[in-house]
Every structure is written in structure tokens, then in C-alpha cells.
Amino acid sequence: MKKWLAVGLVLVLTASFTQAQLAWNVHQVDGIGGDYLGGRPWVKSCDVDQDGDMDMYGYAAFVGGTHWWSNNDGVGGAWTKHTISNELSTMDPADMDGDGDLDMIGAKNGGHAYWWENSNGLGTDWVWHPIALGMPNTPGTSAADMDGDGDIDLAVMNRPFESGRVIWFENQDNATTWVEHSVDENFVNANFVLATDVDGDGDTDLIGDSYGLDGIFAWWSNEDGLGLTWTYHELHTGDGGCWGLDAADLDGDGDTDILGSSYFHDTVFWWQQSDDGSFTTHEFIIYEGGYFPMPHDVIASDVDGDGDLDVLCAMAGLDCIAYWENVNGDASVWVMHRAAAGFDEPWGVDTGDFNGDGLLDICSTAHDDGYVKWWEQPSEIGVTVIPTASTVIPATGGMLEYSLRLVNDTMSPRLVTWWTMVQLPNGELYGPTHSYSFSMPANTDITVPGLGQPVPSIAPEGEYAFISHVGSMTGLRLTDVFGFSKAGQDLAGDVRSWSAGDSYKAAFDQLAAGDPETALANEFALSAAWPNPFNAATTLTITLPETSELTVMVYNVAGQQVAQLADGSFNAGTHELTFDASGLASGLYFVRATVPGQMTQTQKVMLVR
View (cartoon, rainbow, N blue to C red):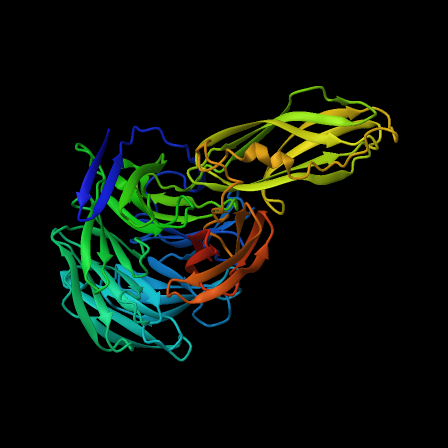
């Protein structure tokens, strides 16, 4: 059953959990069953040891302490647990001492704020440093530069005896001296806090929630940019048990929206910021009666890799991770999916590419069964190549005829590069003899008949292999192959090239956007970037049916140009362009391709470090 809900101008489509979904394979990281370390379990992704792959770190609020798990093989198959502390219960990774590695900063639920120095840079030796001691009940912390001086400070929610304080500690003298500053002394039942620039003025504001039957979501604007003068703004009240916060540009309009979850009222909210700085409250539909989802951690992440931000939530009452797909990219239509399931009462959730395939996976912890796990997003792009005529080529040469099948069994469009190679009788590889790139729609199965590989008469006698690849010429790929043979060399025969030129591309003309009536090669088109989200570099493909003047620029969310990928005359055909963002900050970028009078297309790409 599906139903539509109008919330303001937002349409939310809720898919029943019985709806068929692509399977996410589960992998265990740690745990032996039983209550997870004695308290609220949370897990996040981060490259703690900075070896280029994605690790995890996690904490439990009461007695469990904090740990991180190293991704030993880089593909999420082998993990080692490292203990940071048996006391710290919330934390953020940050380079506190400026030595280039990641330390950890946070607080213990019993009331002490600390930071832990990653003394050897490998995450295997941690040194404790105090920030503030003796504060009763500090459930929430967030690390950020609160005063704009370039170092990392610590925002803290302090809940002494059911009252509530919002404070922050100023980092002085390279994290050796700390000065306390007050933000709000009357935020009752202060719970979680998130430091981010809400109003877009370039300084760090705070978002917070309060725990209790009449919970409050609010934010505080940093009026002077120094963290000394603050203004309180209420977002929502009356829905208690606030257990999750995040902030991101969900509707793609360039400003910061806010996410929050209510444990007691089974609701996930998002607050849409308008141009005037006001916020509109929207609710995600979670269930259709009879369920008690008990949402906990909530985050924004581009799960399906289409360049916009989706929303994930740990559903403790449904024993799963749900996510809402941002269908149009402007937060006007959302579709709910059940992505990860299989353990008891998940609390924390995050995403990361744990197996290095360019797609975001999901990690989580469970309160009641004691496991840390990650779920692998379906990532297979299948390729099958089948001979359709004789595989014995005469001495005079001939055409090796075959059909090609490509399958995109993922939830998002994928930039597919298909190419062929020939293995010669002496074992050497020749090619590529064909290559073609296009954007393949999600959940598609395409068969291309009538393809041919010319085999010249001058080819030596012997046994050959015809190899078909799909993926990346420099990275991850899948392969299919079949053998053929060539009779003795005939210099008087039809001496032709191994290359088929561009004639084979006509077979791909009907493969566009899942509509077989639309011709790719006859249209100006900007393909989906791949990978997306990306780390350091991503590739886009431009299709030009004729020689054209092409300009491709990249802009940040502020509208500033940060890169130029193309500017000049390009021949008809397919052109691959690489956006190298190694010197840019993490975040959302816009790629705009323009052919005067023919095409202006823009797509979003997300740089994640």
C-alpha cells in the first residue's frame, strides 16, 4: 500500500515495509550478543588511521566506553577493535593538536569533558587530556570552531538535576587551556547538540534538543561570531524523547535545513529554511498504524548516489534502518525504503563506503543484541557477452558476431563504461577495440544484439579470447569472456583493422534513461557523475551528436566557480571529463555543461572526505 501526504508543499510517499526491496548484504564488525556495552550505542564512520579506507568509531553512554574499528582489508571484510577509553561516552574526531592526525573530543555522561590525543597517528595509543571535570550529566557534545580563531572548541549540553545548560569551551594554547562560555542557562532537559552554520553568515551556530515528554527543538544564532552573544530560536515543541539531530541542505536551495527525531512520539521531523531565515516544519510518515518505530539517530546522506541528500533513521522499534529517498532532489517528494535489518533495536546510524566500490553503505549498532554491523549497498553492474554465430574465423578474416547484456542491479543510475579487449594466441592483450560510456538507469536489464568484432586476415593462427569489461578502466570492473579461433594467416585476404570504428555505437542509440525510444547518441547529454558521492575525483561523460562549442564549469553552493572542466570546440562523440576536487572542501558542488543554443544541464556532486 502507498499513500501520499501533503505537508505544506512537500509530498511524502511511504512505501510499505512489505514492498520488494533490493537486498543489502549484512557484515558483522564486532559483538557477541547481549546488551551492547551497557548503554546507548552509537556508531559513526571515519578514516581514523588515515590509510585511505573507511573505519568506524562508536561509544556507549553509560558504562561501555569508546572504541574504533579498523577496516583492515579495505573492503570491510576484516576488522580490529581498538579501545580509546573505558569512560568517554560521546565524541567527535578532530585534529586537536594540529599534528595532522585525528584525535577524539567529547564527554562522559557522568559529567567530564575530555579530549584524547592520537599520539602515534595510528589510533593504537591514546593520551587523555581534561577539558572540564565535575559537570553532572553531559549527554551531548559537538566539536567545532565556535569563535572563528581556527582551532576546535567543544559545545556541550549539561543537564544537572533535570535543569539544563548550553555551554561551550574555548580552546586556548593548543588545547592545553579551556575557558567556559554560556549560551543558554535555561534549556531544561538539555540533551543533544550540533554545531553548524545555520544562518549562513560564516560563523558557527548551535542546534539542540531537550529530552522529556514535551521535548523542544531549537537553535541559537552566534550573533557576534565569537560565541559570546547568542539568540534563542525555537523550532518545535511538544514532541519528547528527542534522540537525533542533523543539518544539511535537503532541498538544494543553498541554505541549511534541520533534521530531528522524537523517540516518544514516533516522528522524524525536518525543518525547511526559507530565504528569510524562517523555518517550516515537515514530518516524515514512518508507519501506517500498529507499529512503534521509536526513531533514534537521524542523518542526511546521499544514499542512492544521485547528487541530492536523502534521510536515514535508526528505527529501534522496527529493528531496521529506514531511509527516505529525495526523489526530485528538491525535497518535494520522498519515498521510504527499508535498507538494513537483522538485529535488535538499532540506535546509531551512519553511512560510508566500507568496501571501496564507490557506493555508500550503512553502519549501525544495536542496543539489545550487542552487535556492530554494516550493510553493503547492492553494487553489481552485470555484463554477459554471448557469441551469436560461428567462433571459427577463416584465414581471410571475418566478423565475430555477438550480443551484449548489461544489468544495473542498483538503486541509482550508474555511469557505465563498456569496452572490449582481445587476448592474442601469445597471451598478450590487444585493445580496447570498442569502448562506450553512457548513464544506465537504475534497475535496468539491457540486451544489445547484433554487435560484431572484426578479425583481420593478418591475425595469426591460433586460439583467442574475446573479453568484455564494464566498470572503470582504472578501477573496479566486471568481466565476461568467450573463446574463438582464427585459421592461418592470409596476407592476400581482406586486411582490415581490429577496430570497428564508430559503427557499433548505433546499437546503443536506444539505450537512454530506461526509454528504448530515446536515442542517446543523437542527443546532447551530460551523464551522471560516477562515483557520486566521491573522494578526490569523479568522472562525467558528455555526449555530443555534432562538433560543438562546449563549456563545463563547477560551482560551490555559494555560486563561486571552483573548476573549469572544458572550454572549447569538441568533436561529435562521447567525452569523459574528470573533476579533481583534491584541493577543495567537502560538500555539495554543481557541474554545469553548456552548448550554446543546444544544451544547458546542471547536476549535483557530493565531495565526501
